Length: 114
Image (cartoon, rainbow, N blue to C red; front, side):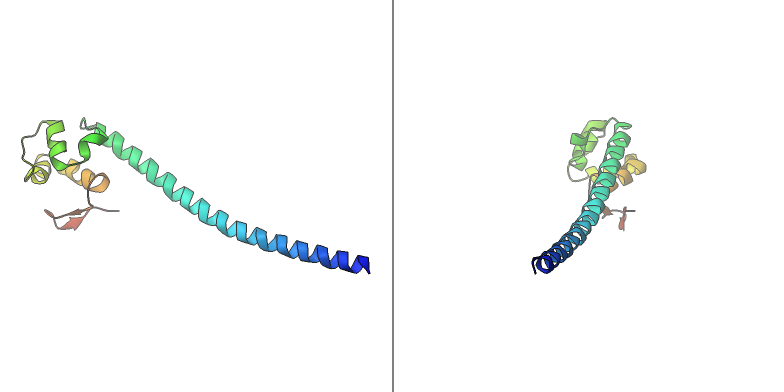
């Protein structure tokens, strides 16, 4: 009789462990996907920082459009700084929309997102 209980106990334990492994596997898949997304975002952000450095910009310079203008030496006011960046360098303008500002550009009426 003890053998039957032990076998049932082991079968129940095995079933519980198998269920736990299925739960853990599902969580692992989620964590792996989140890790991959975060890693990709970090690599992309670091790439943007390197590209901004080509214009002599540091990440701190990109908090506002006027900050960008001041950092690169373009004359602008707070009210027209976005327009000034677009006028001075369209490539930088698009890059800034992609990495530092809202992807949607009200001047161009488009979203600069992949």
